[in-house]
Image (cartoon, rainbow, N blue to C red; front, side):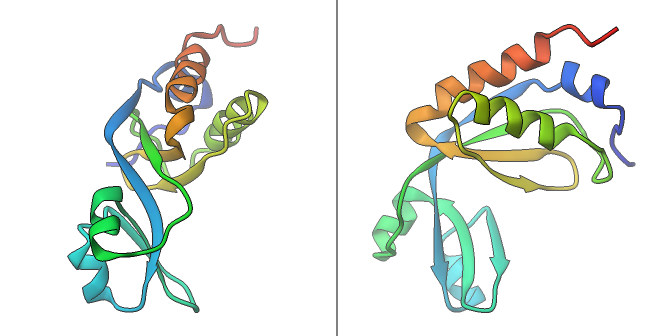
Amino acid sequence: MGGTTDLEILLRSLAPALAPEEYVFATVKTPAAAGALDAIGQFREQEAITVICPAARAKDAGLPFEATYRELVLDVHSSLEAIGLLATVSTALAAEGVPCNVVSAFYHDHLFVPAALAPKALNVLSALAKRKPPP
């Protein structure tokens, strides 16, 4: 079943949830290497396979990475064809100096923010969900 497309309903229903684990974005050369990292996401690019995996797994594997991230799940079933949700969310985070990397899956959108800024990002998104819609 498809998700919601109405922007106001999506924003009121955001229910952002902060996952406890820290993740990294790293690269590997083979799908088998990605699987060994317990990656929660991967994307094949021309240069390598980008993986999103637990920081501890990347460290154990000796993979270089630049930073650690926390995952914020927008716990609303948004349609892949919804218009404006991610623009609104990323604009609100940007206004507060919080960068984010977004992965849209079938049921939810997943935002990866720098670990140190995760509590701030959660506050921004919670406030966004509570705002009053325009008349």
